[in-house]
Length: 253
Image (cartoon, rainbow, N blue to C red; front, side, top):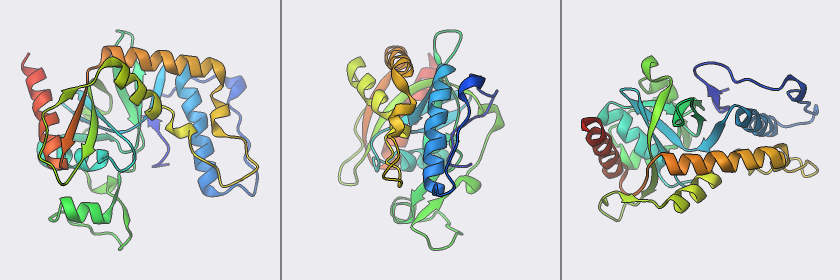
């Protein structure tokens, strides 16, 4: 369940006529998880909620959403914010971002697992104690602090992360609305982009269908036009410091 995105506040409302899901006996555990996640993607959309590939961290009721391609450094940046700057993890890989009644967006949950590569932790956080077996992929969820008051947080900003060990931290560069919308559209479809082990299975993207595809696009456009987005490059600590300073500046306004 740690790799299945769930809401932390109230359960989603679903159409009872469309919630059945049948898996064959031969379905692998990985395919079962991928199929369930894709189905949740669709059900969340009925509740105006996007399932975004990213890391969400929160402080004082405000959340920052870190997005980027696989390996961009989202989890590393989030870890720097959590361990050094007082932020709490909300979601470690898939974030549930919901349109609220005031026309803005909240982070309402996501995947609990917070998985990083051991080699990356040892490079960027050499003093971090890893008390788990010597696996390359390490789930840090149980060792990270949590704050129940941040179970649901208003989305204050979106940051496109690019960790680069060969460069100094860059100042935040605002993303244009179209750039942000394209990035968010890709990120909000990642649960549908998995290829199943079963070569005869239908593509998961068919679970969305035309109606929900249009709904997701409308939500993405609304998100890109409502919440400010920046692009930041540097080490995890550099990016974390920039994002933290941005939020402190916003709090002072």
